[in-house]
Image (cartoon, rainbow, N blue to C red; front, top):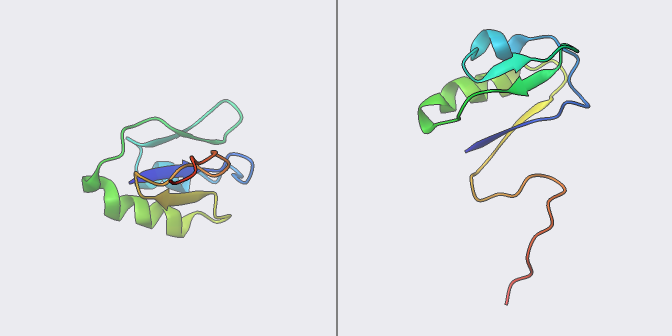
Length: 76
């Protein structure tokens, strides 16, 4: 499981940092920064953080899923 934080969408509400301060922080501009390793044990907290983000700046992806905008190799 991977957490994707869209800093262009983030407004710095900080709800994610309140839910999982060991995973989320904010930078000097007040925008989300992922600082910790995501584990399966964090799954419930991550889903909660995604739900409560007021602007939808967070999303979860399976480990095998590429990040948005990442080119994928063509299958054979």
